Amino acid sequence: MIAGEMVVLRPFIGTDVAFFEQRTNDFAYHGEFNSFGLQPHGKLQSGFAHSGLLDPRQGMLVVVLRGTETIVGNVSYHQVGYGPNEGSQSYNIGIALDPEQRGKGYGVEAQRLLAAYLFATYPVMRIEASTDINNLAEQRALEKAGFTREGIARKAQWRAGQYHDLVTYSKLRGE
Image: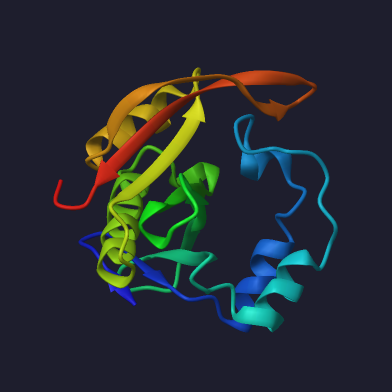
């Protein structure tokens, strides 16, 4: 487990899979910035059975309130490359929080903890995240978590029937 002051990041357990599977196609849970169309039921279960949803290429952790088992959301990461060699690998991170748990600082802490975990576990220089140009709350959260705004990836994401601009953020080892 990775503990902060307010939240803990921990690996998925079997009951978590059912909790999140129920939210797979719940637009209210994912909100306008994390809804990418209908997903097949059982996809999360399949990933959990295969790798526990953790491996060096990609992973997902549950975000719970510290001292409780109250699930507030999840964080994820996947490897991205900027060249063919190992030294050019980075991680892109993401977060999904229950709508009732947003705006309480949990996302800031969870993303800060995930970046620290990835730096401590893997020999990477860069952790990055992107968010919709209109998602001002996530932009503030990333900045509070120590990420630096880099620029705009124009029309980079297909969602809700159109392309959207993304704001790209990064955090480098030692920052």
